[in-house]
Length: 487
Image 1 (cartoon, rainbow, N blue to C red):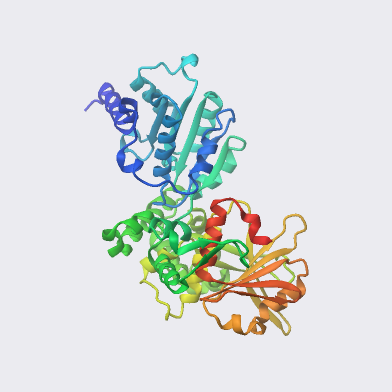
Image 2 (cartoon, helix red, strand yellow):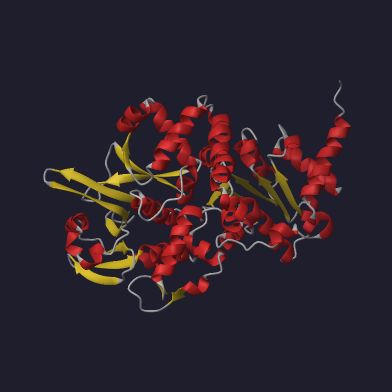
């Protein structure tokens, strides 16, 4: 049967009009306008508003963290700023009828739907075009770079969930034309605010660390444990139905679509079951130290294949690999061991079962949740220190390196106990690390309930409850006050 191209053209334009209701009524759908913008929204909007800069902002992040919602909020804000709604175009590349259509072809359809000639340069001033789920277009980076160069007065914006493709290809083919913007899972501060519990945490001046305090650390700890098990994705927070079967939601809508569809289609992975089993293996052990040799022995997967799997899973924002340094804060030339964390503790709880305080792995999952707060930082890179040389051995959970002098400047030991608050001399690894790194300005040790400060090796060591640390890190990074953490 012959293809009726005219009919297909009309269906494509009809779909574009359906997805751009503001062309007619000037408003985004109420479903999106009713949602509270995430704290990262203003920073992303600022990138979108840089119309004189010949760059396309690319909003990246894992599935279901609110990227499409953020785009709709951008559209709403643009109309509030006086942009003609008919100059805002939204195209979702995962729409089946758009399959195999290039970006310029889709833009031509959109302009046809608006009754405007795309080649009319005088009419292109002030347009914004949002391409959602752009990873579904083969060689998207070449298409988008060409669009940015060709239509210099149209602001191109893109988003995508398969960060693996986006991160690699934006750097390979979009040099100078793309700017990456990462949207992480919900932080603990966001979770508290979304639950309407803002009054539980207070700002106070003159604290030992940060600006945040609580009158009821036991209650905050209960919410922190809730966050660990249920707090990473907006839909899990708000929907009782989703929350009641978090496994089905996370496995079907997040993990399975990445492991079974996105990564295989992008990188030609043929054994999806092997990839799935491998992810389950490391997810259950989030916060553990691994080596390629041990992983290969345990899983039966070749080391070269394992390296690719880890690279893909990290780029798809399911895991975060933390590199190791030694007791002198020196990077190792060959990365033989490393730590792997889930980017969201909910992934472990949903894939296996909600974790409780009494569980053996609770310490590692607290560590996972605190590391996840730091993943929103665009400016700092952190490591873990581990050494075993002669009689000297030890480990420090998180260490930051000063970019200027390449020396350790800040460290955190993550604990879920008050034991070390009362017996700081038992922090033997941290004490040994402070002895070796005289330029390290300060260190933090998390506790379960206790606050305080002591001096070890001439440096301030601050004790703060883990829940407040999580809240403080996420809140301060929302406000771009990262430097306060090192003072």
